[in-house]
Length: 295
Image (cartoon, rainbow, N blue to C red; front, top):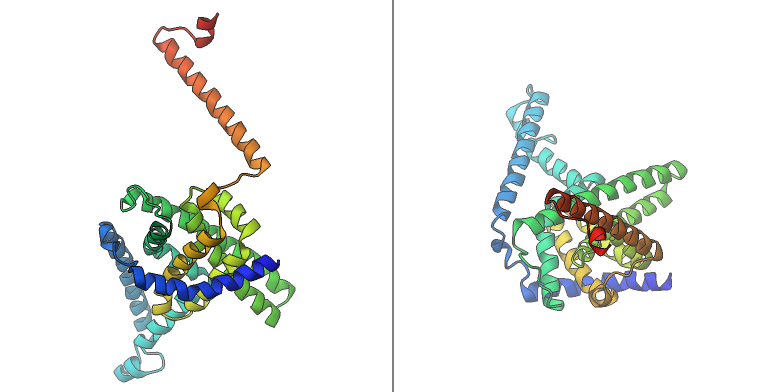
């Protein structure tokens, strides 16, 4: 417990270092090498435009009898409605995860560039679409799992105690999950599966996850600027802190006894499947089985 508390404050204090690191090494450089980024952003832009068009149509339906000045300057003006909706959306519980998914392209880049600098770790074909697509799929899956856990736990907690204590718990729990999702990006760089990453972070780095997630939770409350910069500086902080506190880059992931047994069973099944495949191929070619050769 004391180690987790120490690592929580250690992570909080690492955010200024991460900001300085971003500026010193100009981590945003190189984004143009992702030729598919522009296409991705165009798709996001189209979705935003469709959302705005739908919002405008709905707004005019509700205010068709209002004067023009009331439409533009009133408390329910369309501009004020857009600003309010954007703030509520980007700082809301579920849409925090949507924000991370949409920004995965730059989270991926900033995490990769940080590790490239501090560990001299290069990812083959990092600017190709396929590695990013795999990272994007994983971000969607992990964020979806986090949203389910968040909804279930907070609903139970609210039923038990709906007051100041619940509000504090809700903030800390959401922050913990946000930090976990960012830290999972780090573990992904070292080949951990989603399940292995969850076990690794749950057993050893909850303090770091909370230290990453709490500032991110607060930054996501700041419209536009915080929503964009929050995930980026948090991903750099995660790379710096986990590199200093984790040994993944030295000894790799250490399986539990149960995981080793499962891996051995899986390897045995794959070996048996491969032996059967080779036997079928031998029969098609009119050959003999390996066992018959030995006899």
